[in-house]
Image: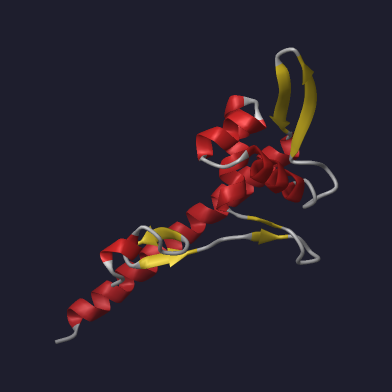
Length: 132
């Protein structure tokens, strides 16, 4: 087990007791990917309607958020997030149907991974418990 100071910095997400993993959806060329950070950013944009508000909510700079959005918009022919330059009230960002479908696909695979790893962890724990 890592030192206490490192427990909060383990890579990946905890999917089962003692199991952390990272999940990425990668484009055919292997150049761009969709991971949990980009998914969370798109979910926040979908909820808040703004890249800057989403970035602030997630504790990242607007520049970083915009860079991530540019990356996800290169995953398919259709953009995942569209941005409208605003007037007095500022701009607006919208997650497209293609983006929402990508989020749903990612979350579904994440749920499948979580269930698989939980099952594997349970199986391993049962085997250890049965050994004397």
